[in-house]
Image (cartoon, rainbow, N blue to C red; front, top):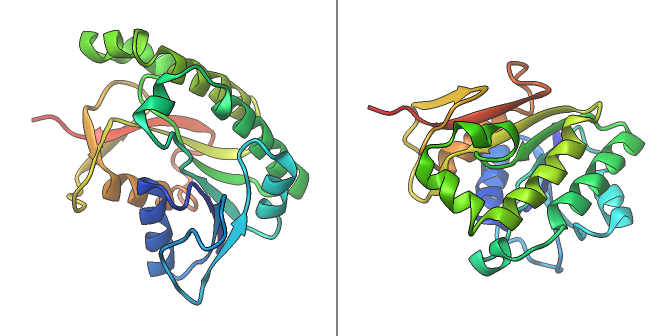
Length: 211
């Protein structure tokens, strides 16, 4: 499978690149600067692209079987400020995939976006309603574009992201709240969604089972 990874240099995206290579896929990492990928492999190449630049995204998508999108803010400061990055990016990505006939997308969102906000416990709901309001609003606008498209997407809403080795035992469900998930496990799940049919054209909450 030929897979384009957007956000390939990020903490989750870089793990997804590694997982895809381990399973034998041909991988392209979309990056903003030349030679940004730290990983090196005969089946890994990079292509320049910008989230706000529609032509560059379309050039990146061409020739692939699927897209794994792990684009996210680079810092807490950027995450908290008012922005339209996710909205503009998703509009560009959906258009590029439709124009090139690439249908399958595994997309990283967040628990608390859209209808999942109502399922949050009071504390994270308070944080999202105050400090995280701008970030969530931008993600919701981006999600609305994705969910109204005709793509075969899986929209992944993880709990709070942790570092550390994969531990397995994650739960996936269409609604509800799960507190935590390690990026290694999240990347495994997102890679699996490129071929698994269980959650196609749905949003799915993922995290560790409580208790």
